[in-house]
Image (spheres, rainbow, N blue to C red):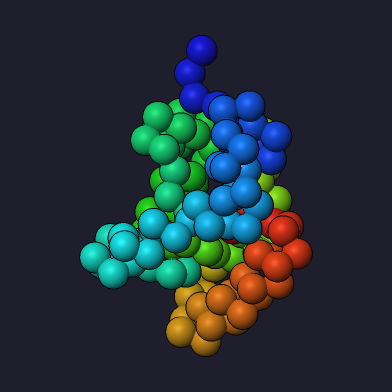
Length: 126
């Protein structure tokens, strides 16, 4: 059967998990990865290895997202909802590559500030 993309109505999520996801609290443990230097606050979101392996075969440039460290939030997350299809992922890759080309501290600050309304409005894919 293989990997499954997460969705807002994912049947694998418990009622407590839904609350954590609703307020994006499920992302807090990733702060440990930032503190350890394994992730940045801003950058392309990391992907499950099995999904990554499949998508790099299906989408040109998918592996180019790994030119920078992964992040908790990113340009794709503040501009697009959760992935539900390969077409969604293609749009996300285009946004991630756009971010990588213009990556600066100022750009990261803009993305961080745009992340707050995404969280508060419970939209996007942060």
